[in-house]
Image 1 (cartoon, helix red, strand yellow):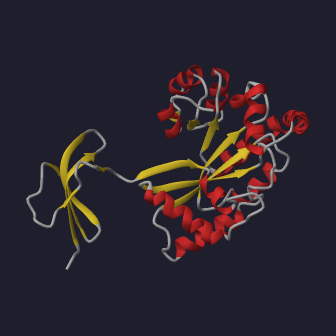
Image 2 (tube, rainbow, N blue to C red):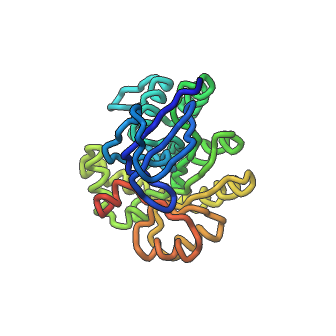
Length: 284
C-alpha cells in the first residue's frame, strides 16, 4: 500500500500564483495540489507555512567551509559533504551546483587547493544514495591566478560539471574597483597588517597583468570546445556584459551596478543575484 501524506492550510507557491491550499502525496510523489482545505482527519495542518517547490541553488561556497571550518583544520571530505548536504536540505534546496574555487583572492591555505577530493566524495555519497539533494558542479575560475587553467583542465569532461564562472577579484577589478574596499574586505577577513596587505596588493596587480586576459581566453576556449555553459561574475559596466555576451555567456552572476544589470537584461543573459544581498539591500 502506498504511503499517503496530506497537507492542508499551507501557503502554496506555484510558478504563477500563491494560494492557501492542500497537497496529496502518494508513495513520496505529489499527485494533487489544489486551493482550499482538506477535510481528511489525517491531514497535517501547515498553519499557513510555505509549501513550495524545491529550491535550485546555482552558486554556493558553503562546501569549502565545511571542509575547512577553522584555520589549520581540514575535515574529512565525505563527512564534510554529508554535513553540507544536510544543511542544503534543511534550507529547502533539492538541486545544487556545488561551487568550488580554482584560484584564490588571497591564498590563506584554508580553501583546498585541489577540489578533486571533494568532487570524489560527492560522487561516492551520491552513488550509495546518502545525499538528500541532487548535486552538480560549478567551477569558479579566478582568471588572474597562476595555476587556474592547469587546475581547470582535468574537469572539462567531468559528467557533474554544469557551469563555469569567469571571476576576477584582483584589486581594481569589478567587485573591487575601489582599492580601499579591497583592503578593508581582505584585512577584515584575514587579519592582515597594512604592510602585508600592501605586498599582497602589489602581487595581485602583477598577477592580473600577467594572467587575467590570457587565462580568461583559454578557459573560454575550453568551455566552447566542450560545450560547457559560462557565467560572468561581478560585471560592473556595459563593456563587461558585452564581452561576456560575445563569448556565449548565459548567466550574469551578481552584477555590481544597475548599469551592468540593465545591460545583462538587454543582452538576454539570465541574472543571478544573492538572496542575502536582496534581503539586506546591498552587497559588501
